[in-house]
Length: 242
Image 1 (cartoon, rainbow, N blue to C red):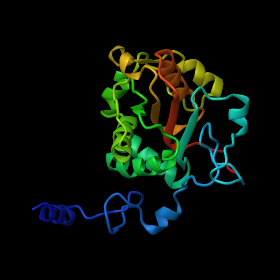
Image 2: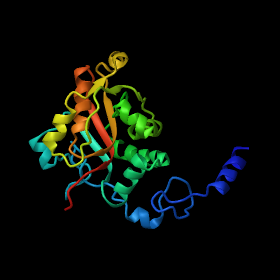
Image 3: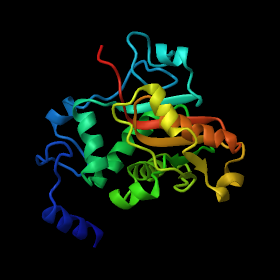
């Protein structure tokens, strides 16, 4: 019966590429051309923020100049894609195009990027949206990614671990210092979750890392509530062209 149902769904909604809508063999995938245009992060990365680094070997522990000068408040960070080309297109489609189907394959890529850094009892939590933005968008893309990542990794997920207590202005076009200033104190751990996270490793999930200001604010909230160590993962990472 299940096989017949899947066949019927496949006939009504044939598999198509997430990037260009071209017909492909299975759901949740990319055609050959879009796959080649997707900037997956591989090889040596900064252990702090996940940005790709030149040279070295994948198992080498290295840090980018930014993390050496201003170490992040979390212990390790990873991303699945560079935020350009198809990486940018997929993030924007998930975030603003109501393409919630992207979350599952995206979480699969994210799970690969954190496969070797998560302690056994890690708790996964998304970066929250303020209720005003949630009403406008109708869903939190970071929560979709966190739920799918939990299913991929088997780690527990707490979707309401964090709460955004202040509505902040959009961060586009702002400097690193301005981003940190705008977000200072905007995120708190939910009152009912404090006992759950005491001394527990946390993996914070977001769609994109630019300066790291949002993730830093969330990390500080978790640390202040007694959690730790904190790790972060995003679907995409803004990186300078090399």
